[in-house]
Image 1 (cartoon, rainbow, N blue to C red):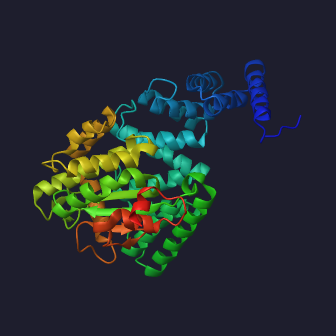
Image 2 (image 1 turned 120 degrees about the horizontal axis):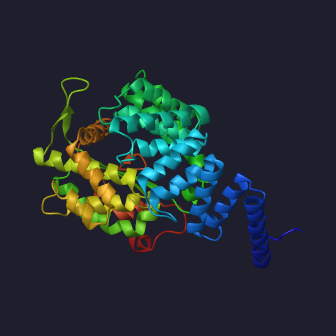
Image 3 (image 1 turned 30 degrees about the vertical axis):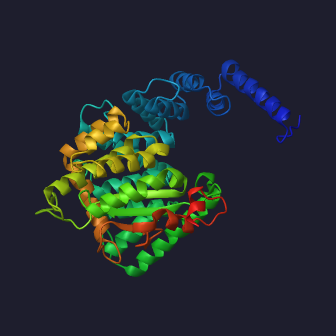
Length: 425
């Protein structure tokens, strides 16, 4: 029977028959791939998440179907259709990886190298296992995301357990770039610009930058979430936690305009400013000197930790909004250098994210994150002269200091603009 999928009744009939087909294939013929499709049906069509979670779990437990193991792990990680349980999530993701599911390896690797306790015997074992899982996804399945994520670990090092290795980071970034990851290509451009892990070469830096831009444009055309009839303006903010101009801009420009512009922005906040950082040996502790003294260094570090924790622990669709809220809260507090823990609670960050922030502040990870912000700040061309510095779509924009929303509206080329842009004309 042919269905007219533009006709509502035909669509209903098609989905009804599809459900019957999946049920028969799963329960009568006991085909694990069809059982997994039944779980997908409950997730995507009827949005019965409890049923979907149960199907994925059963298909994993009874049939050792790797895709279902990984999917149930994903559900457990965020409490989708079941109770959130990180160790159990990691267990099922890891089983998916062992059963040669690409996403099982990728997601287990990301979770294992995060700040979450996944139930391994110690932290070092957890991180090394997570790295192996990412490596499997990168090497065996050519996962651009796994290669890119792993390159980031080697660029920054991880908690003194994984050492920085720019050469390895370059190799992984190159592989990820070859697989079409624009962010990996952008990293290669930066590495050639700085001479980290590869020869310092402005021509190659420009080549990889162009490749990154080309891939991103292709991605926007093929990915509805990137293209979806609206523009996305990249906004990088280089600031200091105790700088009065930074406070004024974030509190009076960014935070008030963000609610209406958020669907059109990709905001990156980089707390560091005119600080300097150094250490006596390649593995020694970082030392920082900040423009407004040691308290500012502590504030910069705390905000770097909070931004990192949100990006690694909170749901992807909420990360940017929570980051802006957290930084806005801290920068409007009486004592921005000590405000992060309270702000994290005030804006409703999960208990796990708040713990990650506290752990980061108390451990070398916070120093490593701040040093990485310093490297990014020092790589600016032209060099940073004023704080805050606002970079919009790769260009330094002084006008953003006083007319941020108006400037963003000018960068939006599509006809459908947020209502705030009408008042900016």
